[in-house]
Length: 243
Image (cartoon, rainbow, N blue to C red; front, side):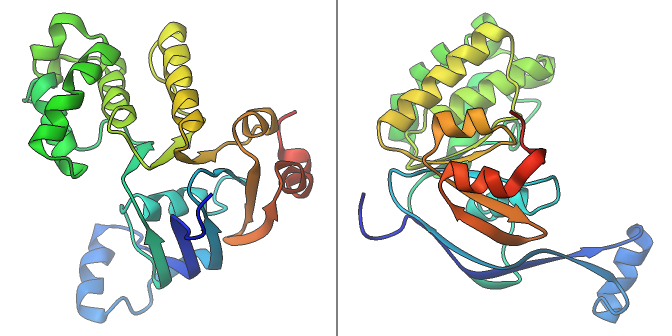
C-alpha cells in the first residue's frame, strides 16, 4: 500500500438547498437563496483511503453515504473543504446516466467512454470486452430506446467494469439483470479487488462488507462516528445492521 492516499477528504461539508417548488427556485435566483431551507448532508468529515484498500461505507439512509460517492465521482462538489481523488473512477451507481436513446449500443459505448475520459485507442481496446460482457446480441447495434431497463443496466455495467479503473465505487443495492448475470458481475468485481483496485463498497449488510472489505466507515447524521475495522463499525451501527 502506497504512502500517498488515492482519495482524501479534508473537513468536507455539503449543504443542500431545499426548494418547495420550481417557483421558489426561480425566485431564489434574485434573492440569493434568502429564506430557503437548508440541509447539511455532511458536517465536516475527513478521511484518507490508500491505493488497494477496500473500504465499506455504512449508515442509515440519509446519513451522507450517497453524497460522499457523488463527490468522489464528480457529480457534486463540497460547500466547504477539500477533496482529492487520483486516478480513473468506475462508479456502479447510476449505470445508464449519459446514454443517448437514439444512438445504438455501440455508439453509446463510445459516448459513455468519452464522458469517462477515455481516448479513441483506449475505447477500441476495451470495446470487444464490453460487447462480450453485456451479451446483448444483435441489440448492440440497435437504438438504446428499444432496450428494456435491464438491457440498459447491463450495457452500463459492462462499460464501467471494463474501463480498467483505479477506483471502483459499488452500491450493493445495485441489481443488474437475472441471477446468472448478477453472479457474472460479482465475479468481475472480485477479480478487480484481487488485482489491487481501490474499492468503496456501500452496504447495510455486515456479511457483504466483511467479505469485501477490511475497513469500514460508519456515518451518522452527516458525521463519521467510526473509521476502523468492519467489526468496530458495525458494533457502533448496532441493531440496524442485517445479520
